[in-house]
Image (cartoon, rainbow, N blue to C red; front, side, top):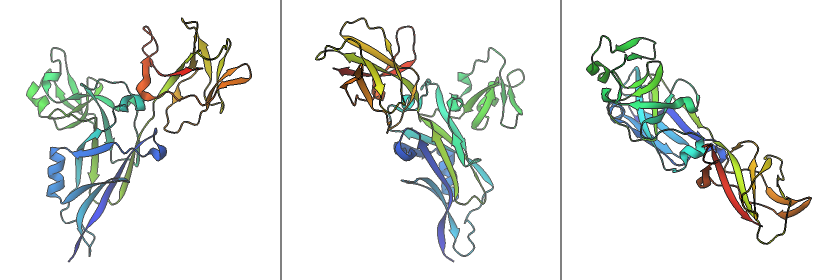
Length: 299
């Protein structure tokens, strides 16, 4: 009787910013209990260009897996080799206390948004027990109540997502130094199950500083030749500078098709202005802490 490895699951992690959604800056790590489960059930995790694959040893005659199981909730840590992930994705959260939590395996497509950012709690020392604390599991059952339970019972709760006083949290038995936590439910008889996780692209206003050095222009305007982005002029404290801000936030893309030009009346002063880059994100001003992406241009 021969053996082979059958595909149980295929997990794609895509990002809207990149061409074709391909997000190559992702590495997946099984957390300790999951790693032990994989070893004990002869399951391997394989990373390919197309995504991540879970493969299990099976008989080539019966197609049955060598070591069966009913269901297992797997925990993976995801490392992102992308220093601009938060800005690229439009997320603003505390990296020390919060994580992006992805629960997958039930649906073919999982779309990530701000609701996936949860507090990370790995011990009762992070919970204020001077006030009443009630923990509810995914079945809406109370599994901890500080009025009747001691803190040790909280620490002994299984790893997973709970509601703590009606706010979602991730409870885990150790601190997790990963950018994203993936919780994947693997079920018996899963075979070539495809799950695509979509991370959105952030939206920000563009702000151009047009420095007048070589041109005597007095009245200029900023125009997107493809009429995707529209700009309005903002007051400038400097006589030789014009400031233009997009009227609406712009959805970031690796291949933004806008062609930005400087016009004076109907005459082009300068064409093909640079698209503001993520590393040039700034607060709008001292009072408005919303982000804008800036570019500086000399005419």
